[in-house]
Image (cartoon, rainbow over all chains, first blue to last red; front, side, top):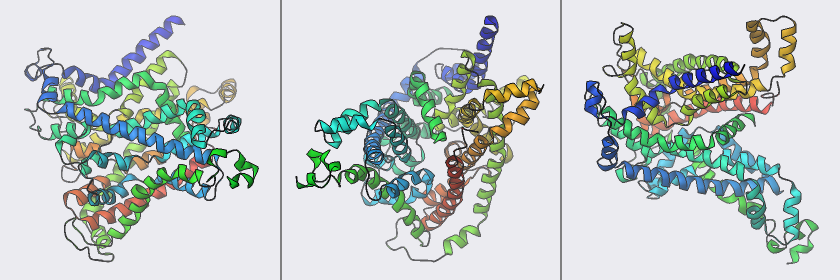
Length: 269
Length: 306
């Protein structure tokens, strides 16, 4: 039985490696020179990373992606948590209608907003700015919905005790609700961060200046300016691709369970 | 402070007694403001623009009635996109669901081996789509790609994967399946784990063969999950954009020019805002019907309680 389990584990690892082989091979390839790639030898090098960062500005793109995804996550969580708190804990006129409007955004495909949001930002002079990348991504109906469900599960007696002690609603939110909701907030933070990190179509239309490119834009562009079949510097492109996925992969191994839970919950409720 | 006298509910909020009724509105206001500006108003703007002729530049945008819709519905590129998108959905969705259910049936056990494999399957769903598109551009490149190296090793000839219209669409379907499979598997596992073990035990006592148990017990009981995934993956198929934009730009000869890619081209490459908006409105109508179906499935709460 034990031996069988070990055998199965080995088989599972092998199957996983085969499944992920294109990505794993691309990471491997990023550490060899273009010459050795084309001639079949193997010369290990970090040169592709140096070229991607030095010549093709990938350090800047990495910074931009971190900044934009970070800001979207913080602002998105702040806005979603306060709203979720109100929807979960207060009885006010129009609550159900307003909450319905928030949940309905989950059904609205983002593409209908593409042209109008471009126009809104153009009129506000925010195309080609960080604000233009961040602002349209802040509202997240799913996070608000998810957090409201979570907060409803917290015993109300805790809030009431705090109110008795003279706390204001904001203090109750910050001192009682947020600390208890930390796992849910963490899951939603990851969910928002990942979604924004991998966002492509909005940066594609909202940004033209290369200094504001995110990693996704930078990678797509690097690939598109170097398309000559047979001549393309694949190891360099793969180094850029690895820079684009690596932060997410690291995060994944740290927090896989949280992520899976967040995504499964999305389907349940 | 006189609000404290209104009722004991308000007495619980002594510090904010000035405006206890306003408090919840202030708390939801930021979220609602963002949603209004970037989601709801744009829907009306899109509808309005779809009745106008405009190119982003000219100072006026004349009202042209249904002209944009007529032009779109009379254009070859729209129907090409509709058919490419439909083919994509019809081929990719059953493929995804069948593979995912088969894999999930093996991985539903809580063993180390299944956890490892679940993790591996799940990884592509959170990996950057642009990276995936770039990596698979290499896999399917004609001269130095992994796919053709594999064919050569088997003694077969090279295939022009991304240069042939049929093959290019097939390649995109495979990549999308590879990327989304992990999501489907995880949802199926959650569904399968909710099927009571007694049902399997009863079927086993009745002498059911493995395949029979799967067909007669698992498949019917997992139907709500299947419906859910069916709708989710059709919605997803109608929104494919990134892999097309990076890998094929809709080509060769429009063979991969799916709806959102056509929308992007019309709006942001050809600057035909009216027609682009008309297409956005049509896509919106199609997807909202699907989304309503999905919410009915989820709302019926049979999903995990079958």
